[in-house]
Length: 120
Image (cartoon, rainbow, N blue to C red):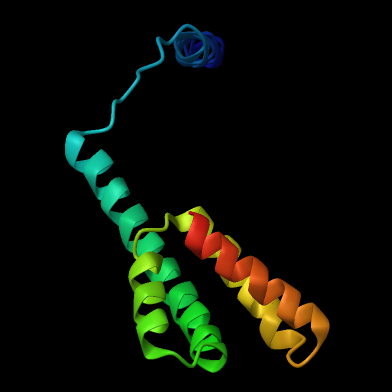
């Protein structure tokens, strides 16, 4: 008799916990303002690291190709006005210039780089 009462009690309690979880109301925990701010700060830091890395690649290619210091200074100033996507595009083109240096392809790609910097 004791075993059957225990079995019934166990089944009842187990059923209550299972059913209560099935009908539980989902709780939406909103992010705190500081959490959202922390994510934005992290994204800005990440983007600034990308920008610094890619800008240094661009400048190294420009230093090799542009001999006029005035033009080089204006180009560096113009790089500061580009957004992240444009810097990534110009950086990938500069990587191609470095890979195929001394070929007509490198000259064409460098022309694209200068056009993107000037026109953006």
